[in-house]
Image (tube, rainbow, N blue to C red; front, top):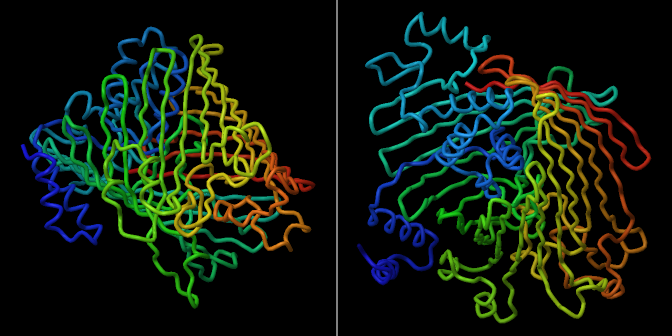
Length: 584
């Protein structure tokens, strides 16, 4: 086996000034190491299995489950499904049936069996092979069969390789008082396993929405980027369109998973994490993760973008270099206690630093020696969750961006912190699984900001990578969910958002206010230096009561019915929505 010095020699041969050098180096390392381990596809961060397993983990049925670093692999989920199956006597009847549904979806990982639509001796399937498969495909589209493996449009499977091709989309009708709009999307994904080493994945989501000017807010699916606007139709004035693509090439071995990827990440144990949330456009990264006993180490080095306002020249957007580095260590200390430490670093304005590609290096002391004024931005996150009794869990995350012990308990503007605390109760009422979550998150003014906004703010494309509401905000959520059966889920929630807006008096002072992640804390008003509490300015409060019913109409089609009552300061309005999801 080559040693590290050999890799460094290879690196010196490659062009040091290019990011390609680092990628080539990583590929060389992957090729030369050859210990075999099963390939592992990722489970999307919005998959309902995460919510199911999190609830059962709180109930004490799945104490070893770690779900604060998403996405995780199908193989890991399959391991957890086996644990649940061994303890199925401790599950309610409804949860046992839900477990059987998920086990059917993970047939390949659990049993190594062929796709259920493949006939004996076949290795290829698609619904247009014959009139028989066309007829069966039409029945699957409109019918529901319990415990049936997830459908795919096309499948290729042999002893060593696997290909799944999926298509789908959604359409949602939304109505707010007398105004309406229509978001819709198209989706495709390609999942590939090549032998025992490589996992390859690619997908794309193409979104559009037709609307009128009185109901023009971005839809929930918008994560930033540069949307396009067109003339509307169906009686609507305007159409907006935006697209996102994700992909990864991953090599798996007993030294972990090494991947070049573009996919959303969720880091943190809250419902709305403050470390990494799905609030930004996808960005490319080189990553490595490894499960070590009852712990997991994760690392990535990614390429992100500054805010548009910082890179606009004569109406054209330039591509300034900006990078995000993160590593975290989750530890399951006992069946009751899990802890984690995360260190994040943002830097830019130069070529990628080789030292920041070392997954285990402690970033804080390194960044002090990288630039004369410590222009690179370091953030620390401390997490913990504790279950004193089965069915009850406490959790929290604390972010430190600046620590001056003499000012810790004062209203110093440099206390750029964020905190999240929550409780989760899970159990069964009248044999129906249910849970209740209460979570509070607060981000102080100037949290996530930096004195060199172009390269140091904790943002990608101008949007906060962490807490989606940004600094100078507080968010409270109380949520209750019910699993009626394998096809019906209900949830009701109360949300309250408080955000500090800059007052009219302060708008004319030419200082930044600290309520935007892209602000420069070097331009803070000195009058606020020792007068900055957790919320400052004119406090804007929005309260929302939200109801959602999810129904699996067929094995391929799902329905969602939503209702929201919103109080935004002195304004009251209601929103209703009906959504159709197709996943083939």
